[in-house]
Every structure is written in structure tokens, then in C-alpha cells.
Length: 203
Image (cartoon, rainbow, N blue to C red; front, top):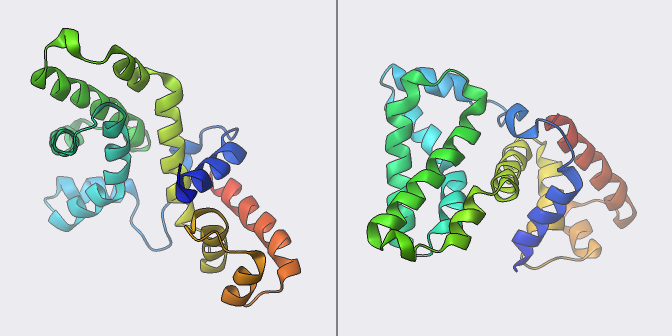
């Protein structure tokens, strides 16, 4: 388990009690909303489609990897899911539900890809059950929400949280103080304020 994964799980553990976080997160300052991107996609804007796919590609891959260990299978699932998204945009009634919709479609596509490659009886039932379990899907959805909320934080907070939770070198407070130019004694209180801002973005 790498430092980046641990960092996300530490943040997730501290924030998972927030209700509705997967649906109410915002976008980075100046970034178009999902609703704006969907509308532009429906109008034939290719750049909007690229932005929408880029925004959700990590979510799709995260779900696909729960079932598919083979990289080619994962890539196939990603392509099929993106195609389903493209075809489904005109019927998408609630843009806020897009993350949950993508998780469901990706899971179904992953199971289909696996069953097309091997006999249905040989598909790992435990992996399929895991992908259908609410805990797995909710964890992935919450992690995605946190990532999106982190993009909205001020640069100083985002840099501090990155160093504290996601930096592979796991720097000390002294290293962080030197890099960000803040006193060691201020790191703890600053972290608390930044996490509070993060919580507010998720509620």
C-alpha cells in the first residue's frame, strides 16, 4: 500500500461521514460545471467532450480495475463506458447523479468484458460480488468527490494537503516548513483550517 493510497484513505476516513458529498462537490475555480460540459457536448463541442472524459477517466478506471486485472480489459471497459456515456447524454436527466451513473455502467461493462473472455462459470464470483458491494462503490465515489473538492481549494491549502497526505517522500514538518515558507508551529493549525474548508466543499 503506497503513501498516495494511504493519504487518500486518511482523508476519506476523516470525511466519509459527510452526507451527500459525492453529489455536491464543486469544480476548480474557473472550470465549467458538469452541466455546462454536457450541454456543450450535446451541441457538438468536441473540446467539452474531451474535458468531460478527462474529468471522469480516473473514476471509470478505478471501478474497472476492481474487476479487471488485465490492462487490455480495463482499456476496453473504459472505451465501452465512454461510448455509453456519449450515447446516454441526451437522456441524462440529473447531471449531479453522473458519478453514480458512471460507476454503475462501468461495473456492468467490466462484468460483460470478463464474461466475454471466459466462461461465465469461471468468472471470479468474489470479484463480481465485490464490485457490486455498496462499500466498494461508495468508497470509489467518495474518493472521486474528494479529488474534485481538492481542486477547488486555494493553492496554499492544496499544496499543504498534497505534502501531508500524498507526497511519496512523506516529508517532515521541517521539510514542509521550508518548502511552503510557513513556521513549523503553524502547519498543524493551517492543516486544520484547510481540512475544514475541504469539509465545507463536500457538504
